[in-house]
Length: 74
Length: 344
Image (cartoon, rainbow over all chains, first blue to last red):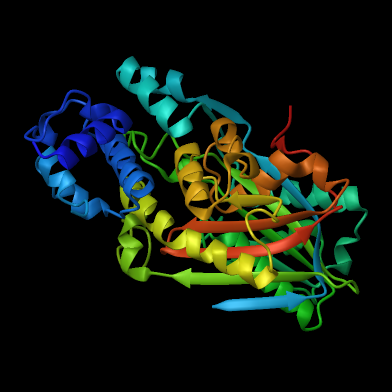
């Protein structure tokens, strides 16, 4: 895993409880707590940690954690 | 739209809340929601209690109580009021408007100008601006009543939206003054986001048939959060600039009290520390829609405002999608305590 992905994943998982223990290939829909609260927490994480505005629509189109992180600038 | 108006002040404000206390955890358990999930949401979002209107109590009743208490405390003759503005999305009837009904209840003059504004969480800012405009063009005293009873409009089975809303009515007296006091406003609208907060049935587009289930409010919380993060910070920065203030020199940022999580996130992006941004109200009273900004002022700053002036930046945001920001100095003013209606 590239170093940036590992770092970003760790930061995301620290802020979004539903992602605890997830890896890049984890399918979001399989997480028991991947719900409307998790979506809010993810939007907030992107905004405050990366200054990236991810829309609810973009977020809902993500299938895996890797898809989420793909919205971060490289 | 930007607007700056001078020689106007807020001279008093009062808020009456619903009288029924609902406990988030107890209600969730009764609805069969997993206790761990309840705790997770309560902690993250900041949901504890809310005050909802008793059956049969409407926004009109709550605002009437707030207005009566305010006018009595200020010893203001109701016949001295030139205009009445009622901001709500939960009027008593489709017709007539609440402002006409309240004119009669309060005993205001027949010469009063009375009209409703159909706005939700940005509505108090709209009402304040209209009052300030009227005071700039001949009115001496304008009463703004803003409130909603959205708890009655949500589906009890909608576990994301139903536990959020509380009910309240507010009354704000705006007066023309000889002193150099200015109010600054910025407004915005993005109707492309309208479906994010909507009561789809009950209007002319999709009437509700007699006997059909009630028309419930639907809300996409994530879309609304996106919208708030995108639109509120520039609006707040804009009114601060109009007023010549900064987050360091303004005393408070009073945001629409959607929930603690949203208020804290938006305040942070506006450059305000949590300490300058009231957010305790919503944990005790719920999201009070158009009454939430005056309620936050009364709840968090009421005792201070009775003694000294505060530089306030405020922003409402919600259904429309619509937003309105204001910067004004308020105080000393008359602020009766926030009370439930009816009282025992």
